[in-house]
Length: 328
Ligand SMILES: Cc1cc2nc3c(=O)[nH]c(=O)nc-3n(C[C@H](O)[C@H](O)[C@H](O)COP(=O)(O)OP(=O)(O)OC[C@H]3O[C@@H](n4cnc5c(N)ncnc54)[C@H](O)[C@@H]3O)c2cc1C
Image (cartoon, rainbow, N blue to C red; front, side, top):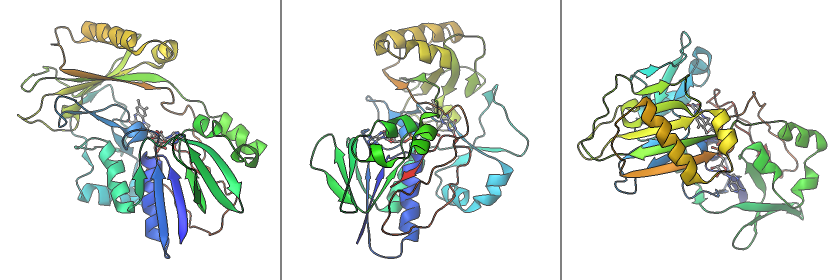
């Protein structure tokens, strides 16, 4: 049986696993490891510890589909729309750049529901809190080590984490990546920012005429979303949630600062934009060291050694500028 490991439970890893399941005809053992405690990667949806139904998208906010990709990847969009995973964005987002013909979609159950959809479809054995540390080649088989537990062996390993995290891996992989590949990976630079999720009491109303707003005049706050309104979900059973994304300069300057201090500054700045908000019942501060790639990274299907040939697929979310995929 072919043993395949996908590293990373973000959009790239989950979709890759689903596509492998669809295309590999023979027996396939598919495992997926992620260092985080839940699925989503940069498409994570946080839950309020007070009420898990009160959720907030801390990373990606919506999916933009151009006419070209609406046609090219029609089946992917149709599938997600048919399952109710995606719905058209209908709430007003102030300051959003909308190009003619583009469609924007949101995920009512939170953006991580896209990833969960593909993970389910893949049937992969998914393990969280498994940080890959080393990859070695032993008798033409990949031996993958993680922070805890024994190393495991796979015929094929697919790495989907941001480029700098691939370059942190130890073992034979260090020498098996060519200098050219290393340079390509090292040349990918990412913006850094923070996201703050604020969860409120049931019944609390945020009285603004938008569901999302890009801010251009604040050194700290770049984007605010009334997250449940953005996803068109309101209920008497959970309160509203608010997401704040910081500017990149603020993120870069405060990347190594204490999370409590950063959260306090963001909250103070928010007060100047939306004065008089009540205290949230819970908060979640997320540091995005690798937020979005600064330029279009060519997807890397780099085959260093493989026992079986697997069919290549184009990825359907072409606007995901920074998806990175390294196949070993
Ligand atoms: C703040 C923010 C806003 C964004 N807004 C939008 C938007 O509105 N629309 C849009 O389309 N895109 C947006 N994006 C970009 C989008 O989120 C990403 O392009 C997409 O999620 C990338 O998915 P990925 O699977 O390639 O990578 P990731 O989501 O980063 O997945 C990689 C996974 O690998 C795991 N990992 C890393 N190292 C290891 C290791 N050693 N061992 C095990 N696991 C490891 C990580 O935990 C992570 O889960 C935004 C991103 C951010 C951060």
